[in-house]
Length: 84
Image 1 (tube, rainbow, N blue to C red):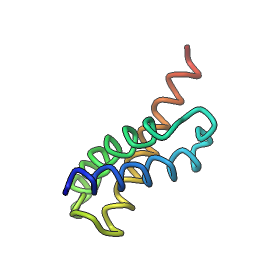
Image 2 (cartoon, rainbow, N blue to C red):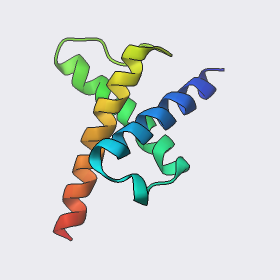
Image 3 (cartoon, rainbow, N blue to C red):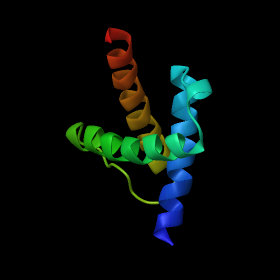
Image 4 (cartoon, rainbow, N blue to C red):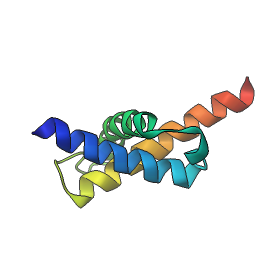
């Protein structure tokens, strides 16, 4: 059941992050899920480095952490795309 939770959080976080960074037109549902799941890991690392709690399960805090990580990931990807 936790896989479904990761997919839902990943899809929501990836979609919201793509809206924030302006990548929504280039991304489909699968890309949103992948970006959201990777973003959850990145957000968890960022939060733990700042002394907070990272991804804690299927809740609002975890969604916020995943969105933060996904936005950071998309900013990095956009920076590399602009340089190439």
